[in-house]
Length: 407
Image 1 (cartoon, helix red, strand yellow):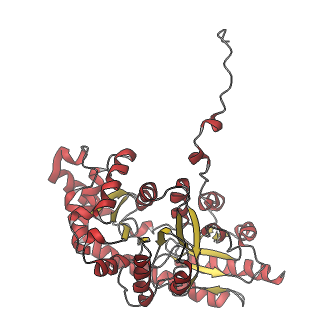
Image 2 (image 1 turned 30 degrees about the vertical axis):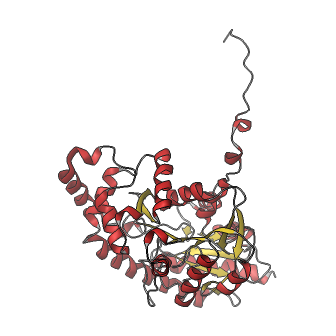
């Protein structure tokens, strides 16, 4: 037993910064803990299908990178990222490598953008609903969220036009392709209008595009970034900031992603990243560089086909097994679709009953920055087998039927 002086118990929570105290655990991550029972069919997590990972190709690329670069593959590197990878990304967008910053997963990119762009009280426009991870990334920096209405064509740009005058918004965050959580795609006509509106009102437009390459039906639309480049004529005048990742097209575990932006934005991203993790792992970047020329196009086609088949099956089973009154989106790509139930159904309260039937989903309300969406839910088809989709949608249909019978 200690005989030293009495030391008071330190209130560690009180020593946390106000910024840290404002952070909350991811609602989705907490829900996933509930749904991880081995016999539960989970449509909750937005996970790529591991059976599609190019295992042999990654193994070969790792050895090739080690052979090509030697000890440099395991050494510290530049904050900006591996030059050949940045050059390849820039070439795809028709911009210099200097306008490309490699980040450790697109989630880090969002966090760093929040850090360099958002002051407390700044107005940040978000879709209703929007990607929960972006809300988590931006929240510690104290934004004032304003929700922008959406419909089957994505952001309602005319509603946005009514919102913008006098609002003094700093940033608009959007996921235009196969949006997480709804699976919707911003229509081609609205894209140009969105870029023009935000430019006219001096609003930075963050285009988050992790799923854009995974289109399995319909016609591709131009990126918001490319429309901004067309409008301004030079990447260093472009008010659109583009974020994407290799997590959904190659593998998520390498945590390789990037941001494209004007030089003043990139300069501050470099400084912010130096304080965060110095640089994205050197070897991982080199592995991805070995894969982008030949393996990546084949892998994208493989994933597109598989996800298209799974989405089609899920939609077929929804039509067959769900009760009347349930509305659903029809994604053209990506990993998600969205259900809207009649008013009065609370999908958060309904989740335990679904889990009892051995099926899980994500309730929709956490995807709304300012609340709402209690009668909505997100389903992911990307990491489910045909048998799981068939059985899981049947079980979810039975759960919904019971809930609607009580209205």
